[in-house]
Length: 116
Length: 112
Image 1 (spheres, rainbow over the protein chains, first blue to last red):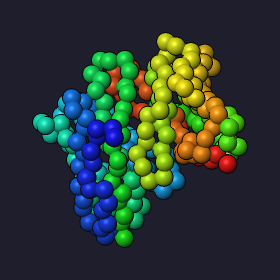
Image 2: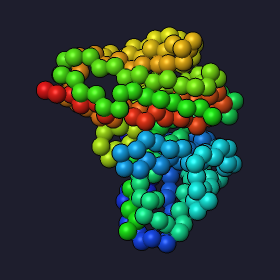
Image 3: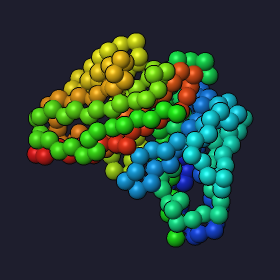
Image 4: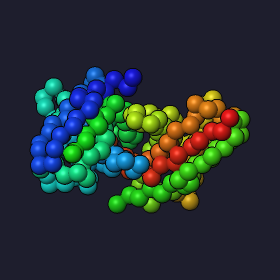
């Protein structure tokens, strides 16, 4: 158990709908990262938050957005869902401060999203 | 931006033999190189990492080597066991709590 929690574990929805995925980082971790993993694919970085502020963006679609709250949990919002959005969505957290040299990340169990 | 290439994409070895997975990275500013193991449908688990100030690190049957000049790093698993079967990902990141850039993954199968 990495200490990172994600809910829900599974989500089944229809095209055009909107969903929210939730992540709670390890206690004390300030950074949260979101990754998407499509079937038999690698891990694609979506977005990073550090202590409530957006820090880096990857290949995140405009239909997707995220935020990190004062208690440091994060939510990933996916809207106007398409069949191709079906994937595993992982969040990871890191305790490293912004100026630190190394970036050890621990992953949550993921949310499996199925768009029908 | 950073690009990480990983080879091979699939690897099958006999139980007890060694397995080697190789990665190359493009950004010479990268200084942290973790390896993750992912079993089917589960989260990636950090199994070993190496920082740019060392050339080799070992943890029981797992070792990682780093060649900064050539910008490549490798995972070595010795005395492989069936439970080593999984997908392995290498990654690289730069200083300052930066995102991880992952390789494409290697599906390792250990044959009894």
